[in-house]
Image (cartoon, rainbow, N blue to C red; front, side, top):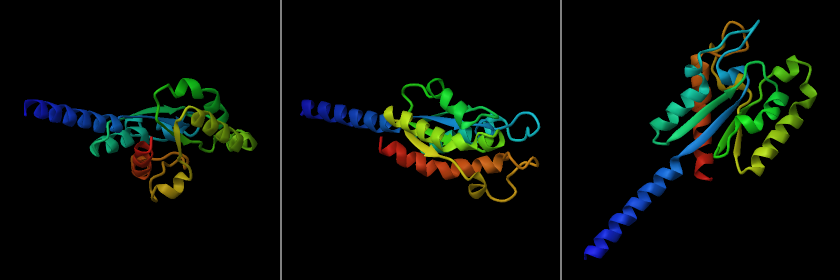
Length: 178
């Protein structure tokens, strides 16, 4: 009887450990100013990083019992070419999911023709590392009216909350299939 109880306790402990380990998720949010939270220069709107969607997403996931760590790898003004060039340093080993928010800086800097190729290469490299990619695009369609800053390019805390809410079920689904 004692052996059975001991085995049952060990089995329950291993199950609990496995359930917790399945919920440990390392996420990197890779993008430009709307990922980082705020812009620079002429269009410096936005929010502090503590209110940007990566921080809000981490809080949402943790509230749902998922031990997630979301690293904000947003760089204001960055292009998809810049994201590609810093991919290895921005996305460390052990990352499960990357949220890629390519933004509109490519077009603003005359590099729009390279955008799709850069996104494809980012996805290819991450896939080769067995990292899932969630694209966060068309921000204006995700965030409700009244969530843009006066500069028209950046979003306020309500907009970032909308991005986090939109991303949460996608991240949860991706985390379950890893």
